[in-house]
Image 1 (cartoon, rainbow, N blue to C red):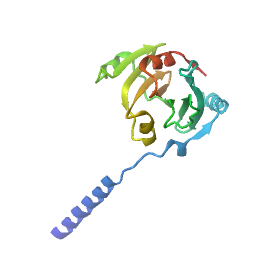
Image 2 (tube, one colour):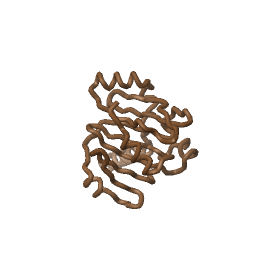
Image 3 (tube, rainbow, N blue to C red):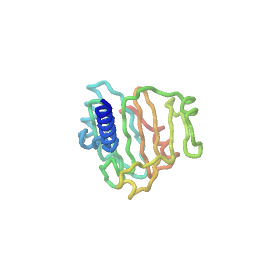
Image 4 (cartoon, rainbow, N blue to C red):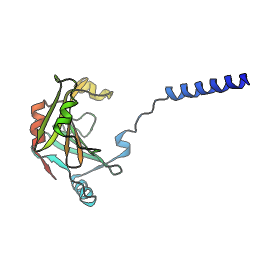
Amino acid sequence: MLFLLIVLIFLSILANKNSLNSISTPPDFYGTSKEVDADEFKDYLNTNNFSVYLPFLLPKNFEMTSIYLKENPFIAIVVYSAENNKDYKTAELTIQITVANSIPIYNELLSNVENPEYEKVYEINGWPIFVYERASSGSESSFIAKYGEFTTLTLVWIEKNQYSINSPTLNTDEVLILTENMILI
C-alpha cells in the first residue's frame, strides 16, 4: 500500500513538473485575425452595431497603413506609420480596440497609480485615460531592436470600448492631442 502511495505521489509530481515546464503562449494575432481595409472595417462595425473612435489628426506624418480584425471576440488593431509600416509589432503607432469589461472613472484610475513619475491619469472629452510613459515593450525582439525596452502605453475608455494606444515615438502630450482628436468613424 505504501509503495502504491509513493508511486502516485511520484506520478503527480512528474505530471505537475511537466505542466510547469510547458509554457503556453497566445497565438500570434496575425494567425487569428484578417487584414481588412477601412471600408470593410466600417461595414463590420455597422453590421455588428459597434461604435469606434479613431484620431482624425495624426502627428509626424503618420498615415493609417493597415487594420487587423478578429471578429469573435471583437479585437481590432489599427496601424499607423510614417514609414508605410503595416506590422503592428513594429509600427510607430498602433491602436488596439476591444470591448471593455468595465469602464473606470477618473478617481478609480487615479487610485491605481503606483508610480506617479511614469503613470498619469487624465480625462478628455469625458473619457478616462491612463498613460504609462514607461511600459514594457514586451519580448518582441523586432520592437526592442527598433525602439528599445520601453514604450508609451495609453489606455482610453470610450463608450463600450477600451483603446490601447502603443506609441513608442510619441510623448504624452502628443498622445493626449491624438486622443482629444478621436472621432466616431
